[in-house]
Every structure is written in structure tokens, then in C-alpha cells.
Image 1: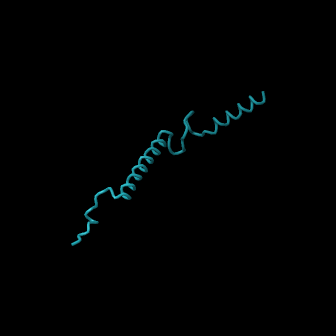
Image 2: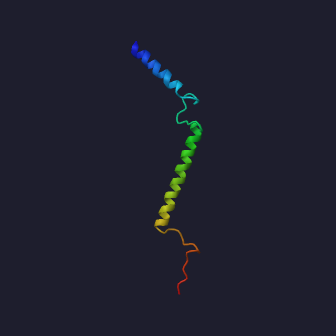
Length: 74
């Protein structure tokens, strides 16, 4: 019975410690809902992925040179 009472107290404490979060919403923060936070993370991952390919293109010289870097050698 003591284990049941202790687990009930822990469950009650866990429910009350969520603050202003809606029940069963994981990954929330005080400023953003879980859905907004996940969208921001996905947008950041997309941007970082694009930057990786930009760095690879620059390292392998896969892009044509711009007119600002064209040398007129005679």
C-alpha cells in the first residue's frame, strides 16, 4: 500500500509540475507550443542541410565563377 501511495504522490507531482502546459503535450516551452517548437527545429535543420550542400559546392568548386572574380589574363 505504501508503494501505491508513493507512486500516486509522484504521479500527482508530475502532473502539477507541468505548469501551464496542456495535458499530454510534450516538448513545450513557456514561449512556444510543442507544434511551434517542432516547426522551428525542422526549419533550422532544413537551413543547416542547405548550408552543408553550399559548403560542399564551394569546396569542390562546383559553381561557376561570378564576374567579380573573373581574371582577365592576357
